[in-house]
Image (cartoon, rainbow, N blue to C red):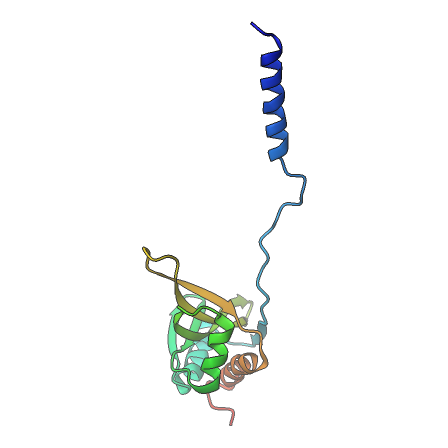
Length: 164
């Protein structure tokens, strides 16, 4: 039996293993840019702040979802140029149910309530032909979206009354 054959096989295995190793940097997931805003409500309870945010969203006929420390307001009826802009931003020809969602996270600090707000678009997009659609989100960072979210916070700080 030839003694060089096991050496050749062993050398080839080592070369294959060495070729598969990577010296490049590890890719970390990049976070999507966002344009959030923080506001502090002084001498109020979480319940009062939630009610004010819900009143502001209700005045604009937005769909409201709440949890213990979060209020989410969604706009479903988007029309005109805003709808076309969002469709271009989503950049998925199969996307359906495109919404603009304002999310308000509430945290209690002593007698104050800190509210962190973010605005994003949420839509349904198919993953494959065989599976159903998946909910996806993309943060909105344009001025129109930021001003809409800021206006809701401003209205909530005025006890839910319209700023106009």
